[in-house]
Length: 399
Ligand SMILES: Cc1ncc(COP(=O)(O)O)c(C=O)c1O
Image (cartoon, rainbow, N blue to C red; front, side, top):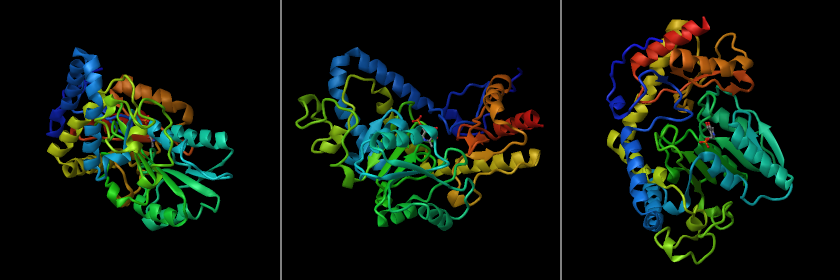
């Protein structure tokens, strides 16, 4: 395959080491971290290895420092957070452990990510609860209608709703504040799968105090080290939530090695994974946060929007396709999704592989309500020229 040389048009791109033979349009699965974050991770790892025993003893204070920095960035307190390697783990902590009454119904939607639905299913099977799937229009376009459409499908037995902040398929943004207020009135726990939230839009937990739980990934839109995510738990659940994981800090008093982790917060300590492990990814979150501060979150969000708009208009010009992602900017996340003509479920996997291996184009082809869709997620490291080439490839493959 002949790969044209790239013209580096974006200042953002200079901060990344990319494979010049690949157009990476799948940041919705994993984004690529800036060079400074990768380098830091490697350095932390080397440093740790110089004396792993002493490094471990120091690690807990350092992990707490990271929790504090994250809390500051997302406008909350570090005592409300816990770190995990991915959002699947964080969602497990809350959904499988939060006390729920007998005979409860857990509700989820028909646009969720399968692994997280499975956590709800496992909880329902273990405690003989009902699991119900409510419908959400893939391309909803009105905030109020969307919230009432969801709330109307809940009932007196619904004790917990698990829903995504940004839907994995079409990028539909759920109006969390409004939804949480409605659920609080009905005493229904709202557990949010924020896999696509951090880095895709501003997140301020002080504005979301009606939420019960939010699990956020940092290795998707946030460009963070692979293996970084967090859970945010409303203080009203701190006492009742028993940790899924048991370790050195589960009970009080914690051994002296942990004195620098979360002094005074039993909740933060009981949620800590306290064992011999690799902290490199967590440590490098400090560098990710520095990257966001130096580049400016607002300029990153506006570049995400610009790239998405560019991509959408190039696709329309070349193919006439219309995206099924919401058109209302308030409800549209950074993903751009299409139902390409004539694509069958069985072809989705091979097509994705063919686009990567034969055309140097990485995309995702998820099923949305059983329909295979083309999901494109550009990030700040993509250039307009790459988008142009990607569209040419897609048009030729689907012609
Ligand atoms: C909506 C949603 N939830 C959860 C996940 C799981 O993320 P992870 O594998 O990092 O836990 C994904 C991954 O793509 C997702 O799209």
